[in-house]
Image 1 (cartoon, rainbow, N blue to C red):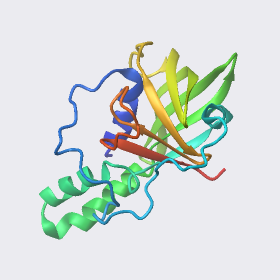
Image 2 (spheres, rainbow, N blue to C red):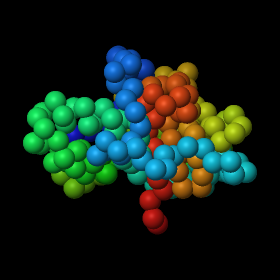
Image 3 (tube, rainbow, N blue to C red):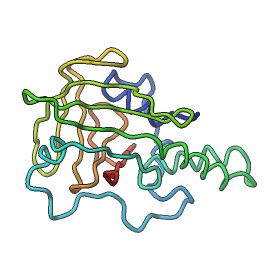
Amino acid sequence: MHRSIALALSCLLATACATEPTSDDRSQVGDAAGQSAPEQAIPSENRTASAVRVLERGGDFGFSLRDSAVAGQVRARCEARGASQVEACIEEMIASAAGEGIVFSPAGDGLTRFVSYAQEEGERVILIEALVRFEDLGDGLVEIRGERLLKGPKLPLDTRLLIDVVDEDTIAMDKQPGAHPRSGGARLVFHRSAE
């Protein structure tokens, strides 16, 4: 199963990825079919009163490849496989990425449980599970700080992860630890799953 996006998520809390994206990797944001998406997950003028409260409330946020900056990278990889296979390749990647996401749930004592997951053979697989704290940086930005790793790779407590709370149901982050999620380079977008 293709888990590169989910593994990038685990990299966010675990450690900086070994390779930095190049300018070639920072393709235009658009849907997986290569068309500009009419409405990317860009911060609205009506920011939530408290971005931290959105995350502390908890919820399952599924990854949206179509709304993420990495859609251009996926298209380029699929095009490299041959023109006749591009659309089938894109649809396969979208289907694979649809089973990836993150969950926030209250854990008590001012902590929140953070879970990064993927799907393997129809089953949810936890990549990282950690207790975290939030710091509201204003304008919808929240910094996540790891407090205790429950499952997954080593969690450096100084790892900085920024979340852009776009609205009550949409969050975004950059796949590079510490990178600003509004920089556009490798923006990953997640939508709250229906409960």
